[in-house]
Image (cartoon, rainbow, N blue to C red):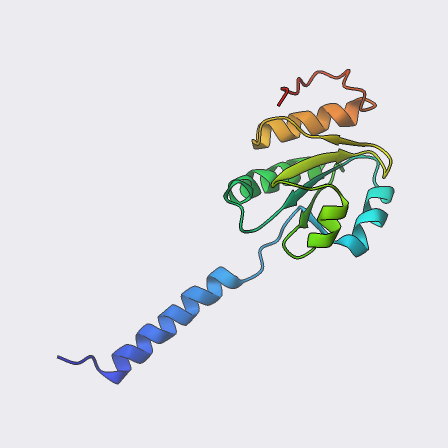
Length: 148
């Protein structure tokens, strides 16, 4: 038995609605940076955690919702979390010394950067950044960063 054209049009309509629902922009609390915006953003903020990532990296995809949750929690403390898509801005990422993904670095201006070596969990990212916010970045805070 062959399906009717009304039935097929109904399925097509339902699929279109479902697809549209999943492609609507999602509000994000992370700041997307590019080569053109990176330097000004870092200079304007005393403390920034930047995630250099590739959308094709499975570790990056696993980190993304945790990083977003951390950005949401830290937003109220005015501690921004940013990200750079290294697939779209590959030359800039190479210039920044990114050789693996995800690579997270803490910036205190353009001259001071430190590799984030903590766990890739919302709680660890938030704890580390609050500790950095409350100290001068010398590592003398309460958060213990495990060696890699």
